[in-house]
Amino acid sequence: MAFFEVKELTMYYRTLRGQVKAVDGVSFAIEKGKALGIAGESGCGKSSMATTLLRLLPNNGQIMGGQVLMDGQSLLDMPEEQFRRRIRWKRISMIFQGAMNALNPVHRVGHQIMEAILTHEDVSPTEARRRAEDLLNMVGINPKRFDDFPHEFSGGMKQRVVIAMALACNPDLVIADEPTTALDVIVQAQVLKAIDDLRQRLGLSMIMITHDLSVIAQMCDDVAIMYAGRIVEHGSAVDVYSQPLHPYTAGLVRAFPNIAAGRSTIRSIPGSPPNLIDPPTGCRFHPRCPLADGRCRAEEPAFQVVAGRHAVACHKADVLAGGVDIWQQRQLA
Ligand SMILES: Nc1ncnc2c1ncn2[C@@H]1O[C@H](COP(=O)(O)OP(=O)(O)OP(=O)(O)O)[C@@H](O)[C@H]1O
Ligand code: SF4
Ligand SMILES: [Mg+2]
Image (cartoon, rainbow, N blue to C red; front, side):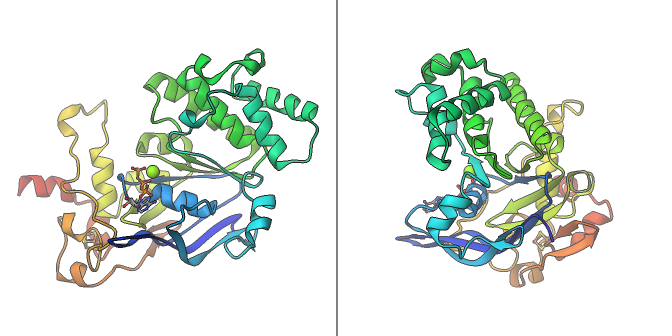
C-alpha cells in the first residue's frame, strides 16, 4: 500500500455555462519520502487537483467522486472538522501558486509563521516563536529578520517564508503549486534547492506542480502529465522523459528549451487545451494529435501500464515506443 493514494478523483466547477470538468478521474500514488511532479499546460486542472486534495475548494467546486487515501485512511469522507484538525496543514500542507504575494503586508514575517503554528497546535507563544525562528533558519533566512515586514524582503525571501509556513506543522506531504514561477531564474534555483534539501532532510513526500519539466527532472522521482483534467502519462521521470509514450508528453518534452540544441529546435504544440465544459469526445487530445484517427475521436483510451510504473492513456502508444518522432513528421508533412 502506498503512503498516499488518489483514485479516480473527480471535481467539477459549477458555472452559468455548465460544469467545468477540471479534475476528471485522476489516479496516482506516492511512496513515503518520494516526490511526484505534475506537469501540463495552463488550464489542465493542476491547481484544481491540488486544492481538491486539501479540500479547499471555492463554493462552486464540487467533488463528484473518487478516493484519497493517506496511510490507508480515507480523507474525502472525513468530517470537515476532523480534516481541519488532523490533516490540513498538519499532515498535508500546500505552497500556493503566487503565495508570496499573499503574505499579510502589515504583519511581521516571523509572526505570520508563529501564527500558523499557534492556529494548528496547542503550544505556548514562546515555543511557537522558537519553532518559527528554527523554520526561518531552515529556509535560509537569518532569524534576526523575524520582526521585518514582508515589504522588507525580496521575492525569493518571501517565497522562503511561505515555504517555512507550509512546513510549520511538520507535515508528511507538501503540495507545491508553481512555487517559484514569479521569481527570476537565479533566485528560482536557490529556492528550489532549499525545497529539495528540506525535503530530503525531513523525509517529506511532495507533489511538485510546475510548467517547468527541468524542475521535475531535477527534483522528482516520478512525473504525471496532465491534459484536460486527466493524467495521460505517468512513470519515473527518467522513463517518461527518455521515452515519452503519449503524443502530448512527446510534444511537451520537445517544446522544452534545450540549451545544447539551440532555439531552432523549440517547437510548441499547435493549438491549445480544450474548454473543459465541453471537452472533445474520445481522447481529449485528438484535435491536436498528429496520430488521431476515427477510433481516437470515438473511444476514450484506457490508462494502461506499459512497463514497471510507466503507464499511458493512448490508443497508439506503440507508435512512440517504436521511436517515431511524430512531431517532426508533422512538421515535414
Ligand atoms: N473557481 C473556478 N470556477 C470555474 N472554473 C474554474 C475555477 N477555477 C478554475 N477553473 C477552470 O478549471 C480549469 C482548470 O484550472 P486550473 O487552475 O486548475 O488549471 P492549472 O492547470 O492549474 O493552470 P495554470 O498552469 O495556469 O495554473 C480551467 O478551465 C479553469 O478555467
Ligand atoms: S489516443 Fe489517439 S488522439 Fe489520443 S493521443 Fe493517442 S493517438 Fe493521439
Ligand atoms: Mg495552476
